[in-house]
View 1: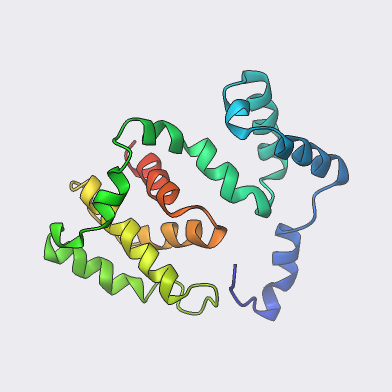
View 2: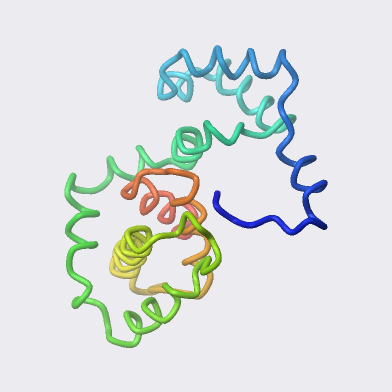
Length: 172
């Protein structure tokens, strides 16, 4: 994801990000060949994936596809107008100044040593946080939302899907 790994943590990192056993890799390859949306609607397939995730996790290269699917992104999108996110993210001036100031303060604090966090990534982060703050004014913005959102950006999830994942996570 672009973070430097201190020498003292290499062994731990390697053990966490180990290669999956061949039979598990084969199961994930089979899953990849299918339409992931149809898997979610099939209780038998969904149970199989949940067992796989519980026992072996989600392979890093599939997280950008699987996380939004299991977090209810499609269900959340279906409840709102098609341009809901773009309308919210396009006008930060609708936010109270203190909320926008707090978001802007935290932008440069978000993974400053990560080589994959660029100026464009920071702009995306701002749009997502602004949109969420406008979506849910009772929550607005809280510290650490930038880090949760930043991880989703680094994993490679699409910008609008990240917004809807925040809705799933926070608007319980």
